[in-house]
Length: 458
View 1 (cartoon, one colour):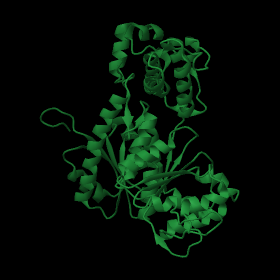
View 2 (tube, helix red, strand yellow):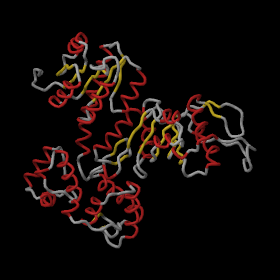
View 3 (spheres, helix red, strand yellow):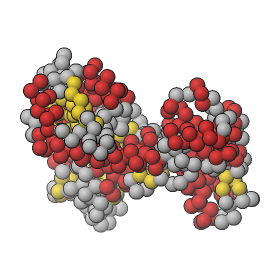
């Protein structure tokens, strides 16, 4: 279906097994290019052929029409095949539990049956608009050489990290507890602060505490506060971090290090939203949102009895997994340039940039310490550099052989691999088209065609 001005209509896929509701929904969306299917196989076939911007998905599909197993299988497949698709799920089965699970798996929104066509229409149109905006953001994020920020502060050009940021933006407006899972140095506190800033609590305090950095005998007082005389040295009544974050957000970093006895008290706060200071008897009501993070395997800790399962589910209503720097193609170079710009201004203004061997070394290193390691290496290099350009030796990295650090056979690479290879080459050549084309073994016109094809810019 095409409108009179020949502009293609936005594509909507409806996955619904009820024939009557199929017809009703299709009639309601005459301003969309609608495809209606009734099972998983047909849904995935339509996803691949039509590439719809938005999908409405009934979780109760055959052969499990009375449950959600088949519906969630479809959702998982959509997120694996085309993760930028806005999926709106519907179910009458355990609405709240299904909603949280669906959002955690990547769904855009949720509505409960019976269907209100008008309300669903508003959700669909909002999802369509967001899809258009995000497509533009992805195009901008592909432009290597400039700082691209998501959540107001996170620099990235990697779709993997943009997806994380968009998930955080979606859940920020709710009051659900969020758990950030990722290796040390991946930016968990930065993302937690971004969540706070994007929430309705942004005017309140953002309070962070590293649970692994505080001795066990002091952690309870740090979290819950204490009354005067509660213990030796308690010369005055002191509010704890939970109380200080009243009306705002408390970020519990390394939450897996909270000892078991204190886990019980934290669980009681999450259930009752009241606290008692150490040495006190007064119940104090506190309106604090909890965001936590850890690099530990909490499920393994639960199995070994080191972490309470009931506390885990209270803290992890939404789980966000953060990719390592090695899983964010192009970001190491992008971040390194941003760090150099900041540190050179503060500490060594004569430093102007990175030498080619430094860019190759940054691109080829695995970054086991993630963004924190990169920041530290660049900071040290800026301080110690003798010349205007930082070389690989300044970063304490070995110079990389171009043929080993960058796969150059574009003809045998698939589309996504092509994008990664071109982004790496552009980053290392500082966006120089001639140098990039030479590195890739192709002509300048061919490179221009590929940049246009993949929405990349030098």
